[in-house]
Length: 568
Image 1 (cartoon, one colour):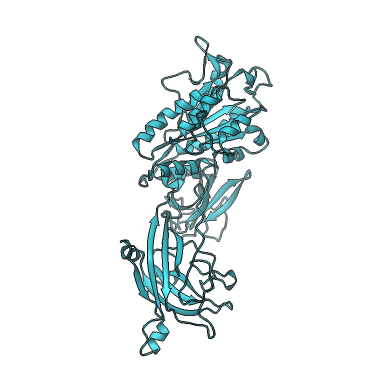
Image 2: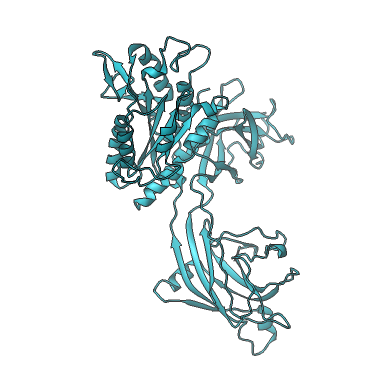
């Protein structure tokens, strides 16, 4: 019989394990599982483990932030501060503490050893605040008399730059002297390789009086302090499972992952270890072993995450396309979807701010092409379906999302809303740079097109063809439906109900369209809309580059980068 384990190699090598008893490090008796895999009853002295394949999450990742400060202010001239950093996350319209570092004594330039761990989501803004305070008098929060400075940024800014250095600010907004804080981001898993190990065992000792053993395996690494944990170097222990929880130790052997790889590198090559019980070895004169364990296979499968590509230098190239067809209504009317009211931004502006505010963190130059479609434009007032809203066809880029909004406001009074609602031209326009990116064979720029539209697509056949072509490129399309029109055609483009095909029957290579009607979020927070429309982008990025066999670039070196604080 065969023992097969499929595991994840993170900072170490081994399977994704179930929860263990913290006192013993062993599998709880009630779980019915060994650390490597589910327990199996066996009447044979050989054993077999067949675990479930590990779940793979492509978008969400756990990020560790390592924090250091330089030049902290002294609260008095006689002693240096005892600094601590408190991390807060903006959630549900309030700032919530999520982590804090240890306290370092008498240090004005601390390097904290405790990491601050966060779940990272591409589709969420995730604003962060770092508060530095002096905990000399046992203070647990940054009071006025213990406050040393704070800074604010988004998690997206940190992971996209890998390392961010920012000045610390006092509560009055002024610099706290020359003090700075540096945050370095690292995905918790140093690598996302999956390791498949295939074991079998022979002639293990029987530990049951009237039946054969029910063996299972635990995989540990012995640290320098003799504690055990699941990391790169592995130690194997083989036990006999007992429902009472008093498992009988059969034996152990030691190895390294490198040894396993080298020992099984050639086809048919296997490794074999004697399973040794130290107690028997020391007491029994003719003791040889308590059985043998054979490693028949050791394979590694490389699985990259969205953060691997982002931290490897891949930029998200964000393009905006806005519907200026007459069905939106006269912008001078308060009923128009394009009404520029001083009291509240219209739905186009709300969607643009929510989605664009996140995407701009992943584009190094913060310049975004912005186009309009379905309007008559000056000077000849001919209908255009891909005109630059800044009226500069040679350079349609706007400075940050605020620049896109400013261009939109200036553009609106100068055009005539018309029609039809043709979307294919703008898709094809964005597909051009994406095709050039594809030809490089590298993961350097992934295009995301945000289409804001109020109605039914007029050129559905052409749009389907354009999407099918774009599905083979490093490109995603987000469509936000504004208003109360019938958006059934948009749901067809989304592909959630089946693979999208062009009129000739050619299927899309992958699902690259996400459609969301804005009316479903008009009473929700902006972050809810952004989370919904951007949730599929990380998966789409990973799927595209994986399908092309393109690995992420090498992680960029950590060079300090002063990042502007996010606008209110």
